[in-house]
Length: 242
Image 1 (tube, one colour):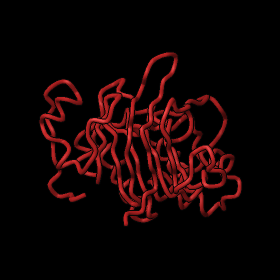
Image 2 (tube, rainbow, N blue to C red):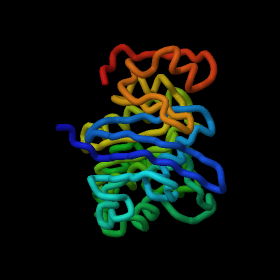
Image 3 (cartoon, helix red, strand yellow):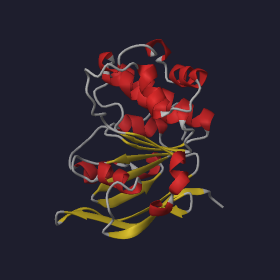
């Protein structure tokens, strides 16, 4: 029997009279990588925020680790989250090390260095956070999540603003962390090549659920046109078998 980490049943979210997502149902198995795709305004971030308990549900239910999200309590420590962008004062006189110690006060100095090393930014330990590039800051946020030893990691278009070469390295890091830390990964992405290379399951969303399954089965030309409303070239990485 599959080990279901996340169970979403008939979830709808309505804010200010506008229905943002409607009747979404899916299950995420432990150890998988699920990519959420769809056009701008499709409700991808809304779904992620609903799963994290950051927006109220109009209907339906969500459980993480078999527990309703409102009752997670200490289980929330098992949930990691990397937002699309981090809003902060770039002039704040805070180094990377100080930032991580502030958010993870019980972490050992060696654990902080190890986490930064895992995501490839150990040399940035004493750099001011305001001097980091967008990609470097996202890696630091991932390192912060690693210090909490999560079991599931949610990422909302985490490579936004990163160049193509940097994006590839970024997702290689995520895949390596998933394997080494036995993580379940749920990510929002606009890049279909990322989906076909890294995801074991893809969720196609345009306010409603349009498809859910392995990329090779779910992402045919007709579905891509349905999701994006236009012809889109799908590049498949033949070397990867999700």
